[in-house]
Image (cartoon, rainbow, N blue to C red; front, side, top):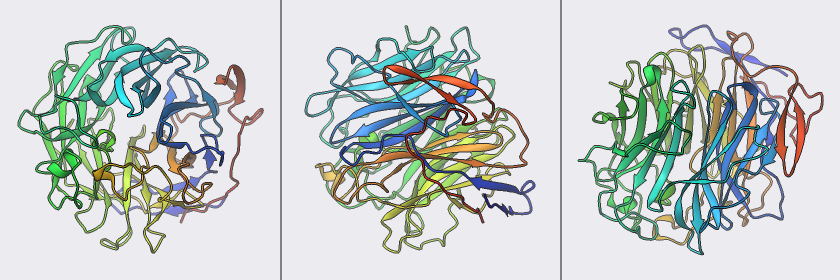
Length: 501
C-alpha cells in the first residue's frame, strides 16, 4: 500500500503519514431491500479494544435501528439484535445511542415508534454483558414527548459508572415537520445504577434561548459534563417546519458545562453566533447536532456545518480551558472557499496523544455538487490548523438516493442521516458513513461503509491492535472473528490500495 507524508504547517507537531484502508460495508448490501441505513455511531469495548460496535438507524420507508459488531477492530462486521422484543406499544425502534461501561457492559438506548405516523412512544434502554450476543428486555427511561436524546457515560464514577442523558422536552404535541412555538428546552439527568433510576431532570439550555435544538454530550476531565447545542435565534421557519427557502439569518452554537457531575449546568458559552444555515432543516426532530469531542487535557472541541462563505463548509472551534472560552472557528475543508461545493455532517474525535480527527461528507469532486465522498483530516496543534484533506472513498455516492418526506420543510430534500461515525485511537481512526454506491437512482437504499486510517510511526498506545478472537453475535448463533484474519468473517469487502497525497 503506497503512502505519502502529509506535511503540516510549521507550528504543528512532526508530520504524520496516513494510510487509508479497505472500505467495508458494515450493513447488509441487498438491492432488493429499500432500507436506508445511516447515522452510524462507533464505539470500542474498553476491556478489549478489538471489539468495536456500530449502532445505526434505519429511515423510511421502513424505520428501525440496528447494531453491527466487529471482533477485529472494524475490519469485518456481523449483525447483532439489540432489541429482540420491542417494548409494549412500540412497533419499531429508532435513533440508537451506545456506551460501554468500564466492565464491558454495552448500553443500547433507543426511541420507540408506533403507528403509521411513527409517533414516539418513549425512550428505552437495553444492556448486553456478553459482547452483543444477548440483551436485556428494554427498560423505559423517558416518556413520549422527548426528542433528540443523546447518551454519555463517566465510567470512573461508582461501580457501574454514571450514565448521562440530554434531550429536548416538547412542551406540547409537535406539528408535522416542526416544533410548536412554545419554548421546548433541553434537559439532562443521570443514573448511577445502570439506568434503573434517574436523577431529577435539570434544564441545561439558557432560559432566554427559545429555539434550542440538537444537543450532543460528552464527559471531560475532572468529571466535567459538556453539552453543545444549536440556538436557531430568529429562525422560526426551520424550528416550526414552515414552508419557504433556507433561512437567511444566523444560528449560534452554544456549550454549557457542569462541574459538579451533572447536578447543575452553567450559563451557555457562545462558540459562534454567526453561523450561516447550510439549507433547510429537513426534520427538526432529526436535525444533526453539532459534533463534540473532549479529552483529558481540558480540550473541548465543537464542529458544525456553516454556509457563511456561500456554500456549506466544516468548521471546528477549540476550547483549551474546559469549555470556558473558545477560539474562533477554523475551516477544515481545504477546497477553494465559496466554490459552490458542499462539505457537511462532520464528526470529531480526540485521540490519545493529542491528535484531533474529523471526518465529513464532501461533494468537491462533482461539478454538479450532487455526489458525496467521505473525507478525513486531523490536527496536531489543538485545532489551530488541520492537515490536507484525505479522501476515504474510492467511489462516490448519489445524494439523490434516499427517503424523501412529504412535509413543507423537506421539499426537495433527501434524508441522509443525522451523523457519521468516528473512533479515534492513538495510531489509527475508524470512520463510518452512509454510502449509496450500490443503489440505483430512484431507490431509497443506503448502506453504512467503514474504513480505517492508520498513522504508521505515531506514538503507540491503546490503538485496538492485538491477536486472538472475540465472540460476537450473528443472528441466533455465535461467530468467532479473529483480529488478524486467521478466521475472518466478512460479508463483502472492496479491495483497494490508496496512496494518500
